[in-house]
Each structure stands twice: as C-alpha cells, then as structure tokens.
Image (cartoon, rainbow, N blue to C red):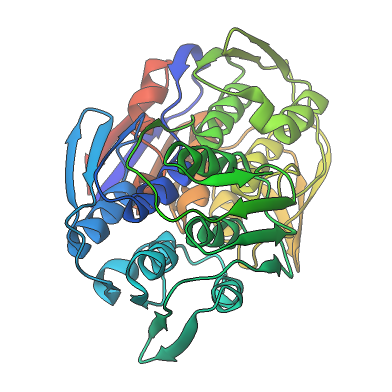
Amino acid sequence: MDKLIIKGGKKLKGEVTVSGSKNAALPIFVATILAPGINQISNVPFLRDINTTIKVLESLGASVEGNGHVVKIDSDGINSHEATYDLVKTMRASVLVLGPLLARFGKARVSLPGGCAIGARPINLHLKGLQALGAEIVLEHGYVEAKCKRLKGARINFDVSTVGGTEHLMMAAATAKGETVLENAAREPEIVDLAQYLNRMGAKIEGAGTDTIRIQGVSELSAANYEVMPDRIEAGTFMIAAAMTGGDIRINDMKLEHLDALAFKMQDAGVEITSRDGVVRVKAPKRLKSVNIKTRPYPGFPTDMQAQFMAMMCVADGASVISENIFENRFMHVSELLRFGADITVEGNTATVKGVRKLSGAPSMATDLRASASLILAGLAAEGTSEVTRIYHLDRGYESIEKKLAGLGADIVRVKE
C-alpha cells in the first residue's frame, strides 16, 4: 500500500486545474446501459471508483476503451442483467445499474452495495421508487432481484432528499411509459449534469436542479457524446488548502456557483475569493476566523466538505461548531486530527473545534474518502513531517492530488509502505 509523506509549512502558490467530477461521471457511465451504441464521455478523472464502474460495465458485456481523459463505452454488447457482490461491494454507486438494467431488459439482479464506512445509507428509497414505477422486487441472499414488462410513469415523493435515489429513478424513468414526477428531488449540480446527458441521448427531462423533476418517457435512447462537469469537491479542497497554508492560488476549470455555501463560509472566515473567466482566486488572510457550519442537502453546505472545513477551523481564531446532518459516523477523522494537536470535542452529530496557533506533524490513518483529504490539509498546515496511510480511500475520489499540490509548492510525496 502507498502512503503520503508531507512536510508542512509551505504556502501554496500558483495555478491548479480541477479534474472532472467523480460524482457526476459515475451515474453518467451507468446511464450508457440505456443506449446501445458507442457513448463517448470526456473530462473523465483517473480514479479507483471510475475503474470499478468500468469493470461493472464490462462484466455486463459492454466494451470500454480509454484514451487520456476520454472514455468510449460501447453498450451494444451488454447481455447480462446481473452485477455481482465482488464488484458492487467496493463502491456504493454500483447499485445504480439496477434501474437501467431493469429498463433495458425487464429484469435485473444486483448485489446490495458497499462503499465508505460513513453510515448505513440504505437504498430503500431507490427500491420504493422502482416499485412505484411498476417493478416487482425481491431481496434474497444479499441481492436485489427486480423484474417488470415495462416501467410505467408515476408520481414519486422522496421522504428525504437523496442524490443517488434521484439519479437512479431519473435513469429508470427515462424510457418508462408516460410521465414520471420526482418530488423532493435532490438538487445537486451532478444531477443536472446527468439530466443533460440523458437529454443528449434523447430523454425528455425538465426541472433538474429544482426539487421537482418531470420526465416524459421515450421509447428508446441513443448513444451520445458528453463532457463531465468539473469536480466541485476537489475544487473546494484546493480552496481550503490555500486558506490553511496562508497561500494565494488560482483554480482553473472551476464553477464557483456550485460551491456558494462553502465560499460564503470561507469569506466569513476572512478568505478572499474572486472569480473571473472560469478562474477562481483564493487568498488566505493573516489569520483565519472561526465560523459555524451545518451540513445540508444542496444548495446547503456540502457534507463532502465537512471534514476539510473542520481541518481549517483547527487553525482558526476562536471556536466553531460543526453540525453533521447528512451522514452518521462522519466524524471519524476527529480522532486523527487530534493527533496533529487539534482541540475538538464531539457530542452526537456536533463537533466543537477550538482553534490552535499551530498544528504539529503526526502520523495518521485515513478512514474514508473525505477524511483522508482533511488529514492531508492538516499535514500541509502543520509544523514538521506528517504521514497519511491507507490512502486507497483518497484514490477513490482525488486524481493525483499529491502531484497537483506539489505543483502549488507543497512538499508532499507518495511512497510505498
């Protein structure tokens, strides 16, 4: 296994370019199941989760070719309707193949999902929605087995906002008979990206980005080309890296409007943020100020930026209160941040962070994807040398982050353990 060695104290300066969005690319890859033919997806990041999705598609019979950040997926040869446990267990998003397989073949057998250990994240809302569309579903031996002659449009009101559930049912309903209305739908930019891709394929979807999405089912979809949106979580991580190190950086290929909630909180902390022609400049203050946050569904503060923001608050003046309202078990990074000399106490879903003058380098261990980013940030801001192990979590969602940070002046290298 690999680990990262970080010598902290370097102010980040220069320019960095954001990769394509993992959370947008994964459902877009899955959506190719719906359209036999060659789908060309560009701005694809090199990540473990992308490779896992490719393996899932290939196991179903698809042919996948990659050239740089462009991936061609020929879904003509898909002849299997089963996604096995061995593939699905490593990545939760794999369960999204259920709806498209059901829509295309009238049947599907998919293992219950795995992924990061940040809470149960059940798929009951996915299954409830598919049943509303007319699917017969049985849970047996750790698998979801579903069948139908043809899915039929329905009005579906989600009990809670669910990104995966919204994406799943949007794909399944694209070729269902009649109209489907998704109410209390998730509003994330990645959902808009998926809807735009599906519409490029011939779907009729309106309202993506709002809490009500209308889908007029069409008889078939056609293969299409599409460019994946930039990764807003990667961009946000670079923003915080600049702020924590006293840096001044420019971030290319970033849509600041996708990170309004983060940007406003960072500005409250004293960070200077400006945007012009797709380039965002982030300049740190002499001393960060403490700010409270509560994670909420989009357009609220993103749960995927909570760990990174907590790391930043560790070196801010005063005390901040961080409330996690999306996932349970998403404070596992706290015990690791304490190793750097942070002052954090947790009660339930709330963490109180008292800023310290300086963090000190320490060995640490990543527990999930975003937690691993928070440990890197702590190492960049700390005095001395830090190690971050179990970075296979990191490789699920950040493309060559150590190389990008090194390009900004960080002293960070990847080595074999």
